[in-house]
Image 1 (cartoon, rainbow, N blue to C red):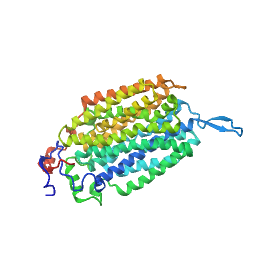
Image 2: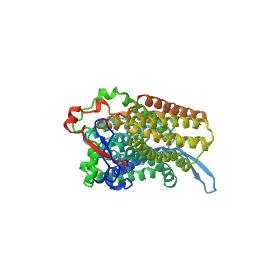
Image 3: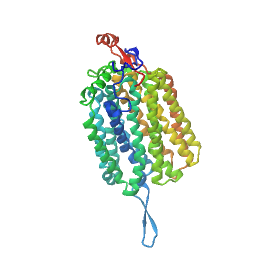
Length: 493
């Protein structure tokens, strides 16, 4: 046997077991020789584009609404007023308009990807959004309602992306690699935020706010071309996968069920405590995330008087920390499970709740600490430590119901989109013109309270076990010869 030189342990692989067969021959650091990690890498850049295309307006709107000045021949500077004289309330509606469309296609994306596979829908969602981004400057200049309309349509197409990725992992991710593969992909969201915020600030200052939309629209279309050429819906369709990796993935996922005849147990799903623990946690995490994503540039400019370039860099800093920490959180979560130190339920609860509690503490710290350096430090950790929560709730769908994971993500992300709609509008009404520090403190208090609520609910209701309504009948499993199958497993995954 190829693994004869390693210490072996025989484990029974059944319906409720996390045991998996040995990994294929290439060592773990040669990720480019493992097609599932190639898929994860391209998914990373897919989510990178998702957030570049989503975040760009948060920076652009600062440039679009700031005062413009003209210098006369004698050196006198006169104010020309902003290019777009939108009120705080209107800016709140503009920033939230994306989510009006985004919330409508979560369930649809989850269902279609579960039935037909995630590759085409995931790629098309990002590709069409990139195309619409290219025409955004013209529409914004024509009328504010056209800007609102195109952002809503962009949200409709991007709404399928998160549910679709779980349909891909249901086919590509072995059980004990779910955390690392999922967090590799999801961390692209935060890497995209990190890059796009300072890049957008630079583009706006150097080439005008219109260049923001042209640049990231083109990048998104280039990614779409690569995704379409390289990725397949399942390992069986991949012409470049090795035989050993294909067999490894197939044997690992042999208890995941088939989606060819997808009969979704809606009543069981909607009455499951484990499902609602995920949904509420996702809502809680997104509230703080979307609040800072849309409001942090304005907060830094209004309260601490940072210019556009500096506020763009500092606004991206929390997401840099989160992108880095997500790589560690996914690896650690799978390590604890692989070594048998913690059960899947314990891993999900500990990682999720510790992340939320830390975010609560630092969001409150940002409210009380008036120093500009201290506030940025607290906000950076308030966002960055959420990486641990993502190793909890965001992967949990695959634990409790792998064949319905994309549908569960669709349900969760539908409700978790509400903060993107409500939070910018609420902040727009809380923060007046001119803004007061006490008003921004209220915004931070609300986010901290929601984080804490999410921690309590998830800690009491979450599960990492395959749910009864997600299992196929024992008789069918026995007919397929799965339950009594044994494999040799390594310590290295």
